[in-house]
Length: 501
Ligand code: TNX
Image (cartoon, rainbow, N blue to C red):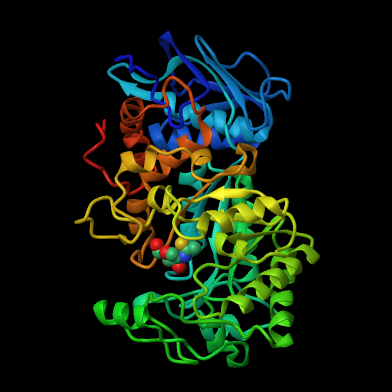
């Protein structure tokens, strides 16, 4: 067997030392353990190798999985692969992440399948490692979302932000406002088919994510990005604001302009707003937040707040304060795009999501810092590095370019604590968003997400000063993920920068 150096692991563990030798995986290999991670390991090994290893109830077993809270920090694990493989998670999540590492050590050579010998000790740098899927511009059904959860949790992401509403559609059923899904979910951007999640669908996604140690953060985007709300309930929204940018962009892309009460099929932003001075609007927000909170076990509800160019600034600030307070009243922690930091009295403890550039422009840094001043914290989604919907190169058929052209190296080489002038402890972690204006299928989504999500996984998980936290090491290790992605049917983009194996 060729000993790959460094070990073929992404994200790089805190410490990973190659051992001589390999541990064969054969139909007689047995695994001992009582966690859900055991079945996940067995199924993944079978998908990859065709070999179905068996469970045993007592020692001896070639592979042993156990949880011991003293073994490492939260979500951490230790893994030793010698004559036997011993995986100890600090908790169930740690065990799950150890299984992901074990699957990356599983390799095939002339003598068959085997685990590479290794000593690994690992735990995450940041507690928040998120991905976002925009299911509003294009809708992705429950099975697609589950596959997305599988492929991103394998990289040790632990939060899934679902962008559930935008100008083009409303994607989750709300009992108290039933016309949202009845009238405003049928289409997607460009006139493609739409869809929505029933409450049972949404709960199924939440439960599936939890089984992969991912917490779902639902987002309802307010007060802008709300044209679809007006298709269902015209009395909640203002007339579309047709600004010069929107008119120019729509003409360039040959897209229709928004028309009040009709489904919007273009991608323009900043033209819609809910009515800020009507109490009815806050009844609506309260009902939606309450119903979302009831079916969301995680602590967060994202209330949007981006690009509300159709809402006057003073009205926007008023709305930001009221909407974040509504989330707090529902017992959840509000999350908002960084623009809501313009409001002096945004609810205390609100988490801001920074989506400006790695070199902040305009008022973005100030707005982001205000969340910290209000006792909140920040998620870093710097658009020129983490945005998974930017093109890899100018000729790439999918994606946009407004934040830049983002090759894999650009996506990898950034430091989340170096962007804003806030204490390092205010940075909860990162999130990599996939906006879906240009992606109609999950396969298209995957081409934009993989491999760049792996770069963000390493930025979020691996120690900042770790020996393998270099582009040269990363690109070598990243190349070794190709057989894993192929086995799982992940349509990754084989970027030319990476030596794929
Ligand atoms: C900006 S980033 C948006 C989205 C678009 C995205 C496209 C942010 C908070 N808002 O509405 O889909 O750019 O890249």
